[in-house]
Image (cartoon, rainbow, N blue to C red):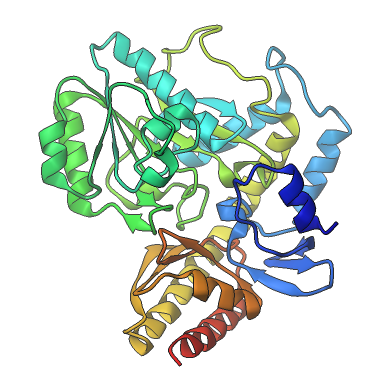
Length: 397
């Protein structure tokens, strides 16, 4: 039986997989068992910030494996502490975030942040959590309760009580819903799953005003947008706002499962011994990989490349928009988190790009989401644009 046939035999049908058998990865490329190279703009869905086979990350993993692969979280672990120090260094230039909890994944980190908020709310007479239509915060029931995408929620009801949604960037609706019982607002400052939508300045100002008035917690979901993806350590740094809790994951473990949430002094003492925990969260091998990943991104010019190549890629895409106005509706995003909104369903475009040896992701039916490794070069951008041009030209024939 083929690999595809075996997958269909043994797995629940939860993933619509590409029909590629990958042998290995190098830099920004994935290479099949038959030796065909594909330029990967999925980037592991924002996980593989340094691409594939980064020697620094690989060596850190090997070194840690030779020491120990797992310890109970009842032991002090050097990789965890070193990672926490590094995250604190780059996330707290002004000392906002003083505590961290390490988890297995982004959805587990979001669950933990919701528990932290709920526990804080119990002593502050607050219970209502507001999130936004179009959002995606994870697939567990808690995370789904605040995920504003019906395709992920259908059939899993009932969800957590005390949760509701507002339209993204709708200031008047937010004013009408926030009150003294509001516990938290959960927000992606750049929504990924719904097609790379960014919070505008008026919306951010409204959130700030309401937070000052009612004293709720602001939880920033930086799972996809964090650690250099948008040209800053966190996406919220592009805006005049600082959250109380930040949720992060995806690139944090350098390709290994790792998530975290950070809290400021408002929530620093909410958790006490035994009130929250995890068996595998903060795995030492993942932490070792994460340490080198963050150092490489923040200290070795990778974030500068993400800014420069991201600007170059966006400019080239905007030029394609001018060339194909009947096909491309919008180009938006920051850094290496970009979206191309089409006038049509993008699955055919995605398949055509696959034939042209470029891997792109389609989200929200008509948005091509680009999350390439932050090491993407100008030459690789030129290749991508050349293939998009060919693809769009063929599509319009």
